[in-house]
Length: 189
Image 1 (cartoon, rainbow, N blue to C red):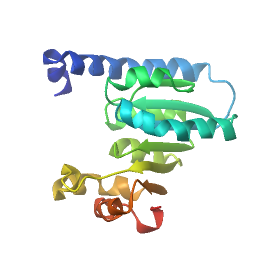
Image 2 (spheres, rainbow, N blue to C red):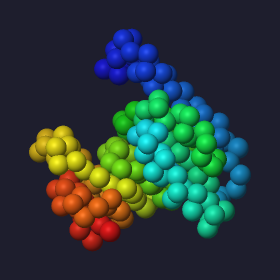
Image 3 (cartoon, rainbow, N blue to C red):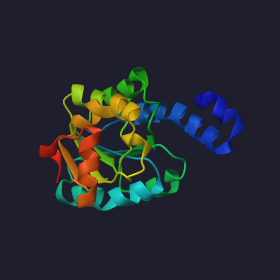
């Protein structure tokens, strides 16, 4: 399906090509990765979400300079914003299928995965959890009209939302909707 969309839309074509090249970029970096330093993976959908993650990423860099930082994104709009972040490596998130996301996680071996806003991909989250990574969702928002609240979407993503160790809700009204998605009450702040 994504391949077909890439034939029609230049934006989808850019994203499709970026996803296909991304694993090679991460593999090249991983082959020269300096030492066993812990790695934190930040993921955001687009430029706006990357900007929301930026203060957290910069604070992590200041407080834990020994950590490596990887950044992934979904939308082509994130490319310019990502280039301004102090990350060791960055690229498109591969398609959320076990083989591709598993390869990314095996290359990077993150100890923590931080997702911004609500760009939760089940294979990324559950694959990271299965490999022992901790999980955080920051600036979490869910519009009252969000399609993610539909029972079909909730059924498909419930386990992923329940896997988060920490969910930083953007505001109090978000909490009830996050709980409906499957987030555990004890994880929410």
